[in-house]
Amino acid sequence: MIGNRVVVVMGVTGTGKTTIGVLLAARFGVPFAEGDDFHSRANIAKMSGGTPLTDEDRGPWLDTIGEWARDRTESGGVISGSALRRAYRDRVRATAPDIVFVHLTGDRELIEERLARRQGHFMPIKLLASQIAELQPLEPDEKGVTVDVSGTPEEITDRVVQSLRKLDADAFAP
Image (cartoon, rainbow, N blue to C red; front, side, top):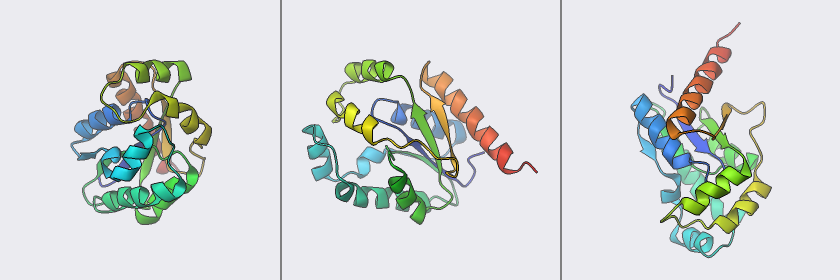
């Protein structure tokens, strides 16, 4: 199903992009990349200090994600990244046009609860509000699926797989 496509697991902080991305990549036997690893030190310092990134800050990061995806169009892969706005997803698609987005979404209280338990991550819980305010959900003309993050990581991954299969089936329906 993923085949030679690359999937970006997107959403606000605390939705489980890394956890689900790792499970999804393992399920399909493709490489996984942590999108946060592509941020510059300056970006990480800014976010660690509680300051949201600007579009200018994000540009090189988005380009790197697009390049990673483009380099895997023959083999497939899964990468995590917030991809909060349509313009950001369009920028990634400009480099990797066949990319598919998996938007992880859920109840704010659940996400806050998960963030409160998370340890060792640079993103503070106080940036959740700015990410929610900035989020532009996938639009109908964007190749992707939206999946709720309630339940266990395995249940969420199962829903992602089912949604991607349906997306594939719908793409080939007469």
